Image (cartoon, rainbow, N blue to C red; front, side, top):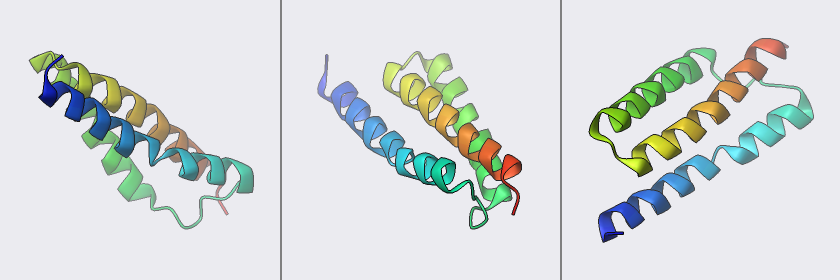
Length: 85
């Protein structure tokens, strides 16, 4: 595996894992009041397009981490709609 793929995998891991505390906090508190619905909607759309782009260029780091980030962001978006305060 070349250096650029390793850097891509590490970068994707770090930026994806950054969402985990927010998912956990939102789930535990059952509150997403301070999260922007518009921001997370746009973010999910952007991550989805990055995932499509990764598929088009066949780059594992781009595909892998954007799939995982999209799932985490969609969970947060779901909580935002479900836990309306």
